[in-house]
Image 1: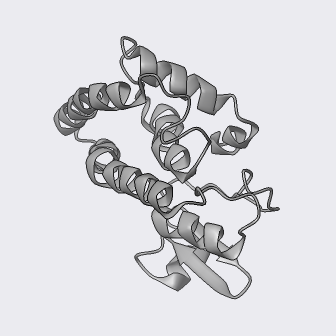
Image 2 (image 1 turned 60 degrees about the vertical axis):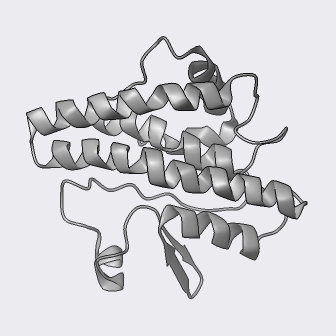
Image 3 (image 1 turned 45 degrees about the horizontal axis):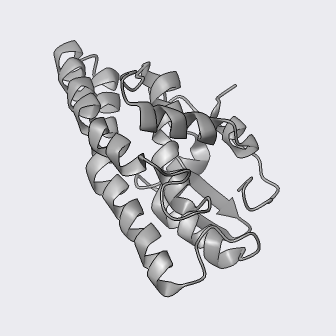
Length: 179
């Protein structure tokens, strides 16, 4: 939302505790992030970013050409299918106080990262020459993993590290730091 220069309020909650009443009222599928935009409520990070792109087309985060838009969407799908479930497994194990499961999940997450390091080699951004939704979707789990579960990528992944540093330097990344 900062990249689109929209006014908003962020409300963090501890998922280890009871869910906020606003999310309970929506139902069990509502989770973080859930967007309340007037009378519209949208949950699931991928749906939220697509909704914001459609609803607020100023400061676009998808390229103009259909082929480039498809490339961003394919990248986002890959993140969603390959990386986010591994991060989710770490969170689930942590919430269940399952130390062996967490160790396994963290190892599997770390083992998945060299492919992302290679994908970012020689690139400033995840896809193309400009910041897009692909960067947002790929970047978001990293500060969450660091602050919520204490996971940091292995230090030998230079391309991933440089990209993470560039993303963290963006003013919009400050919102990902819980108070």
